[in-house]
Length: 434
Image (cartoon, rainbow, N blue to C red; front, side, top):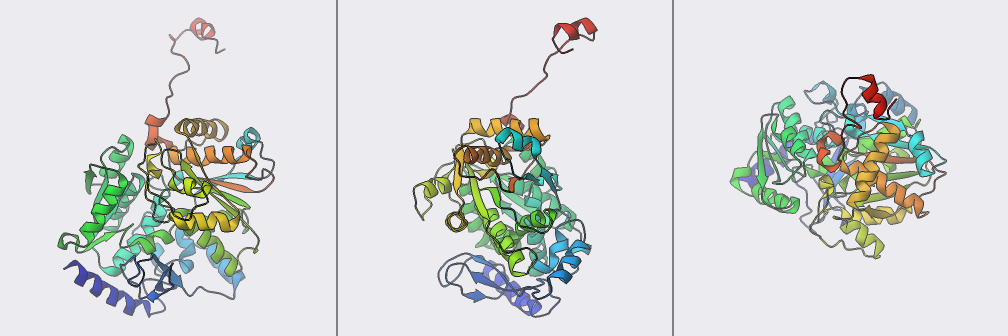
C-alpha cells in the first residue's frame, strides 16, 4: 500500500539524516509552520496534529561567515554552490541533474528611466534556466529528495512550467515521469512538457482540480513509488526557491535589496525568498537591515491581492480567468503566509489587468531586451503600478523577478513585421524605414 511505502521511506530517511553526510545535508527535521511540531524527514507535507504545512528545518553552519562565503563563491556555477544551505547531499553537484541557477541579474537602467526609478533597478531573469523557468530550481531539490526516499516516478500538478521542468529533470536523472496539467494550457508549454518522453495527462478543469486529483492519487495504491514534487515532496521542493534570494544577494555584492517584487501563484516562491533572506542574515553573509517584499498577481486571479487590500487574513478562493496561466491558482496554499510577509516587511500585494500585463511584457522587451512570459509581465506591471501609487520607493535598490520565457506564452502578445516589402531600395524608402 502507498501508506506503508511512505512509512518505510520515512524510516529510512530518518536513519540517513542522522549521518552528517546524509542525503539531506544540514536538514534535521520537518517543522509545522502553524504549531511548530517537528517530525522526522519524510515524504509528508502536512502536520498530523494541526494539518498545517510542513517545511524543512536545519542546523545551519553558523559562526564562520567568511569561510562560508568563500566556500559558496568557489562552488559550481549553479544552485549547488549553496548546497550547505539546502536539504541535499554534499556530493549533489556530481549527480545527473540539469544544473539550474546562477541566472542573470540584469541592471535595468533603461527600464528605470521609463518608470522614473532613480535608485538601482534590477531584473532577476530566470528564463535562462534549462527549461526556461524558475521551476528548474525547485524540481532539482525535489529530485534529490525523491532519490533519498526511493521513489521511481516523478509527478506533479502544474500550470505549465513545472510540467516541463519535471519532465526534463526526470529524463536527466533516470526517473519515469507522469505529470498532470489543465487541459487548456498554452500550446508551447504543452509541447515542452511532452517532448521529454514522459507521460503528460490533461485534466478537464482548473489547476485546483488537477491538484485535488493528484492528492487523491497519492493515497491510492496506483501512486505507490510516486514522488509528487509539489505535494508529498513539497517541503523539499519549496526550498529550491531560496536560491533566488541567495543569488540576488550574492550578485548584489552580498547585500540585501531594499525592495523585491515577486509573482504570486501558490505563494511558495515569495515565502521561500523571505526565508532565504532571513537565513543569509542569520549566517552573517549579509548585513541585517530592513527589506520590503511585494507580491504581484493578475487581476483575473488575485485572491491574495484582494485579501491584502481588504485587510483580511483569510484568502478566499477564486476561479481563474487570466492570460497569466502560470499564476492561475485560485486557492493558493501559501496565500496567508504571503499576506504575513508583505505586512511584516512593509510591502504590499497588488494586481494588474491582462492588458497591463501585455503592455509590461512589451515594455521590458523594448527597454532591456528581455522577453518575459506573462508572469514577468505581471511583476513589471505591478512594479509600475506601485511606483505610480507612491508605494514603491523609486530611490531604493529594487529587484523585479521574471520567472519564465516569453516564447512559452506567444499567444499573449501580438507582434509581427513592421513592414513587408519587395527586395528593392525604393520600396524600403516608400515604407518610411530609411
